[in-house]
Length: 260
Length: 260
DNA sequence: ACGATTTTGTTCCCGCGTTCACAAGCTCCT
DNA sequence: AGGAGCTTGTGAACGCGGGAACAAAATCGT
Image 1 (cartoon, rainbow over the protein chains, first blue to last red):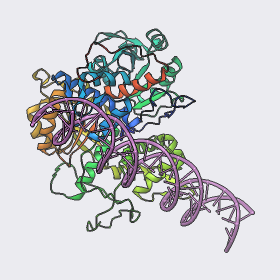
Image 2: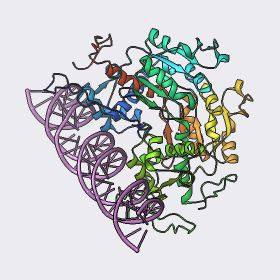
Image 3: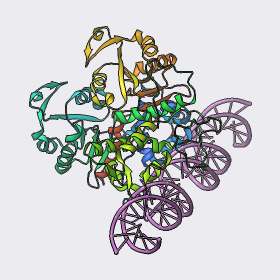
Image 4: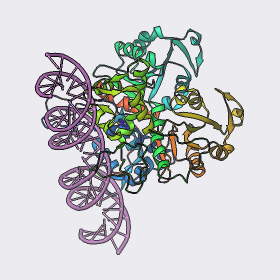
């Protein structure tokens, strides 16, 4: 939640990130007219999943769905889904279900993807290339406004429809384009320095693909995506499954050489 | 956070850990009585983080570290770190700390990355290319044994030191190389079908980069990495930071056919 | 040898998140 | 109109994970 938390979620399970969530944002809490907006982190991490499921349903022509339907499409418990949605408001109709388009819009508005956010990708290696070309970004409430890299050989290279610019333009780009999310796809050694520059330039959200811990001041959100850590988590369970019996999986090439 | 995991085998859920797990020394574990090695999922998700921090410390020449040191390097609370490590056994020395090399080996052994696991990547688009070239895999207990793709144009293409093979070789490769982890980097539409084939071929762990939910039978683990979902989670917090947002947008033309 | 110091391993408590179960509310049929 | 049948929204129980505090153990100094 996150995960790792994600998945801390996060990941939940996922990559757990430390978050400081003010339960009551306002200093005064005196029966505000608006419902308390303190949405739990675990719920926030699932809202995008619901949103995608709703988009899929809409594309298939579904107009209305029950919590059971949507929960199935999102891979969660229907009770959890209903409670999650209840944090946003009462957007369903008892006895009927949810209007797909209406709920889709409400979730998108709550997440804040109704207007596109500017994203800069720093580090245009293999992963940076993949991220720059990933269509899911532009179609889901984000627009990539800059690709930055430190390698002079990559300067000016065209990726997708964008030209790679030098890392020295970082501050300029952030200011001019109003970048609010920085995506770190640099080597581990460079991540902290780039992160510091992003934060200093005013970026308050960072998605970190570099296999290292980046420290940021309070008020800045960092989410970490780490491929080898995900693999190692799978390896643990794989390891445990194989420990029980030696029959199901015969790996001629891999021998267990564990000894203490 | 990553999405749910299907019910795994009989995970010893006993809250009252009957005994601190004795070090699994050379003595054969009887396998008679349950083997209560139920390490919490949250701890399992952090073990790779500790492992990486230890490797970094070792590379810097550190021989010994306290829980405070390691916790700082891993970005967690020292109390949490100690509790996590206590699930593995008593590998520290009171008044002294942990031997970096020894603890590194113990964690690696617990995760199961002392022997390399065979990994197959399916879907060699932009992301698949990046994953195939990612050095972190081979250096951390995994070896990529196959790159598979359905596009005839990509067949035979060299990526890194490997040749892209056809998707029809999936079953063969899984059997011959003993693939235990499949990495899904296909388009969303193909993910479920490929997943089914992987599972049928005997793969019991899947790392899913496709932006869709894949269903697997019990006993198979799936971890999901979703770039746009991570971005949307950041977007939510970004959205909230810009407090006092007017959110002036009124309901779009999407009619609400039901109710209200 | 023995106490002071340091650091681990563990226990206890608290808060969050998940899930069950049910009341509230909407629609449809008779 | 009124009851039957659904489905949402929510109150409450509960289990898990996190963090502080403490007891156990190992080294160091005298």
